[in-house]
Length: 192
Image 1 (cartoon, one colour):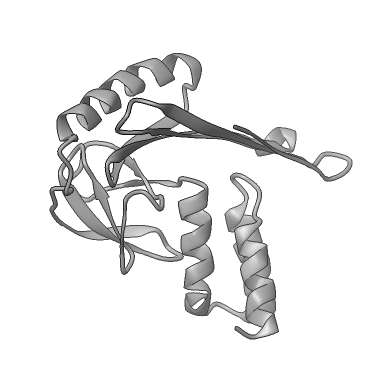
Image 2 (tube, helix red, strand yellow; image 1 turned 120 degrees about the vertical axis):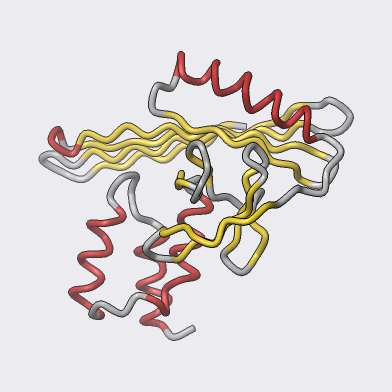
């Protein structure tokens, strides 16, 4: 990777919550409109930030993450039983097709999806959740975004919980807030 590509990729990967479009506009000023060579950086950003997308023919938002990635820019949604392609950096979804994950926990995954959907709406009104099989374990992901650019701040909450097949639950919470009125302050914190 050239140093220019590495620098531009680092700008993309470090974009504050809700501000990727601003970062992309600045990048276009530097390198022009051809952003395809930065596809890996966009994919990494969206998977790490748990970006929610609409699945063609689906019934709701689905998170992009390492836990539901099938490779080659394809992801799956165990709730709708579909896999789909994502075009980076545009985030356009297409080519939805039937997909059944290789897991014996599909009923548990769907039950957890339903229960967490009801619970998170109380505490995180702008949240999206995803429950995905990870081998014999289950990953439970929660992302909640709150954007207030008119007040010069944006924030994101991300939770990752792993339910092991032995019943042990472990997790990580990440909070990222960017405040930029009369200065530029960003808080990124993580708790296990």
